[in-house]
Image (tube, rainbow, N blue to C red; front, side, top):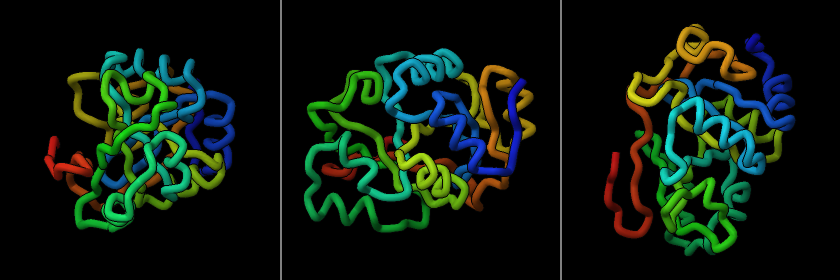
Length: 185
């Protein structure tokens, strides 16, 4: 049975123990785990029916939590990442040589976003980590916009749901390359 709670401390404990959790983000519910748990990422990919070649998004409350996975950022790159925009922006940033394949897929870049949702910020602080973040849905289905939709679409495949409202964004984050500025979504 999936634990559903409004207590970030319980969800953080689930993450630390290697669990897969759903949580509200700026526009939809996200599905995630900690990036250090390779077995959890494999399980998340299975739930999402997402191929290993595709990279994943890492979100964090602070850019320092993302640095171990990235090449050294220029001041311009750092400024772009830290500037809040009207629409949440996920940046494709050069991955460090040590960034695992299971995070970046076949790419030399990693997708990252500084999160702007208070509950996810709290999860990052409690776990002292960035989080894997992908929409809470199966491949080809619309993302869940509420905890009850997560339950009906993902059921007991996940371990925990942090109940709470999503942000006011109507659309998911855009994805942009940090160097070329190309928008992919």
